[in-house]
Amino acid sequence: MDIQFSDYLNMTEINDAFENAQIDVKKLSQRPDDATMLKLYALYKQASVGDVQGDKPGFFDFVGAAKYEAWEKLQGLGSNEAKQQYVDLVAKLSS
Image (cartoon, rainbow, N blue to C red; front, side, top):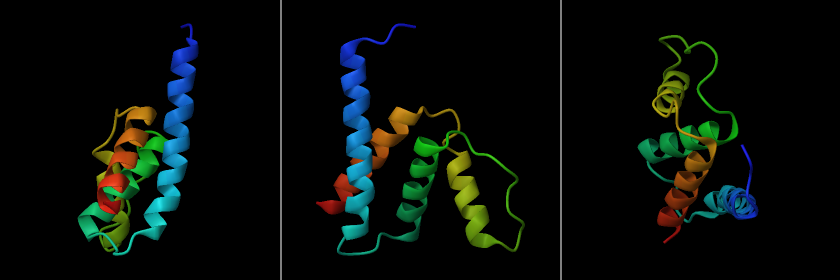
């Protein structure tokens, strides 16, 4: 597969936007609700690690299990698409 210069620019732009969104999310005036926090977590993990890995946390680890399930729902989503969705969500929360 040949990567074109325009593809490289797009990848650089999304990576820069993703890094900036990680900074911006820490500056939100209000903490997002739990469902939105899970979505942010899952998108971040999908973007930076890929498909869910490891065993699902045990029944009594409610937070860990919720995070795992949120990430698992994004299985198959490409890294760049996950980054773009993360950036878009942070932008929406910032407005």
